[in-house]
Image 1 (cartoon, rainbow, N blue to C red):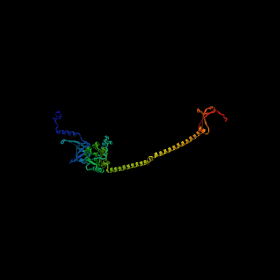
Image 2 (image 1 turned 45 degrees about the horizontal axis):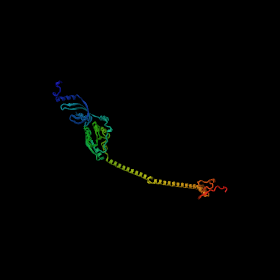
Image 3 (image 1 turned 90 degrees about the horizontal axis):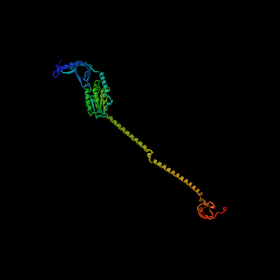
Image 4 (image 1 turned 30 degrees about the vertical axis):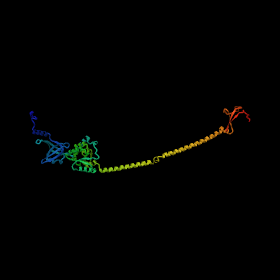
Length: 408
């Protein structure tokens, strides 16, 4: 191609040239194997037209195949069937559309689905989406429960009936969505976001009954699991029955074995709560009566003690002891005084007996000179010495006539 023939604004390609070039480029891709979910199956006289949808993204491919290929498929092809197809990409120049012309259809086996779910489980677990520390507790009594479930399903009936029977005042914000098939994930994620944004909703329940691995496949979808983990409102997963364990059970804040079990976990039983309140009132009243009785017995014991039964008894006993002690002291003092008085009397009598007065009373006299000196010798009283003679009843004066013969 020369420079003059190069594509430009002055030398544009016609539509047919572009369409032919695109068809040529796509034709070079050859055959490819593609996995997805089937939807919009339309079987005509000789050709079947379907849409192959990516379950993890909002993308799809138009595919076509011979009618016999649909009828001879290893499984019945229905909405939501997971398949692997081999086809050649084709660009139709007349309509300017792209499609995949399929020449082989294979169903994805249960083993392969479980293996993929297990790989996704390990990935989400490594990212911490199953961490128990991220689990939010359920409110004790939610005012409004958001319920995501199939329209007129048994799961909806079980949740609403059991919850209302347990707590009649409970309210529901119900969002009916597809719970299996190609549209389930998108609708559930949309309903989940809507309920999570509602400030009146205290807890969200995702409920559906049991089913096969293929039926429950949307609840192990990565998009739904991440949407549940991103919710700020606590989420309860009630998908399937006890043996079923989709990945949303592990991401949710609470896993319920069945929709009925979810209703029991979300709201308390009014009858049981009233019975518990009655029992607690009885136990508290009994405990109070026991406490009062115990305190009364303790007070009775305290009042029966001598110190409280007769508070003045100790003082009275001590007063009696003091009186007895005073009487004993008084007797001892009196006895001591009497003894000492007798001794003093005896000493006085002895003193009186041995004293000069008693001697004078017996007829003796004491002769003193005028100077008061006791006359002891005759030489001390020469003739003319004035003397004082003391007798038993007084004293007389006398004059010495001198010594006389002692023989007289």
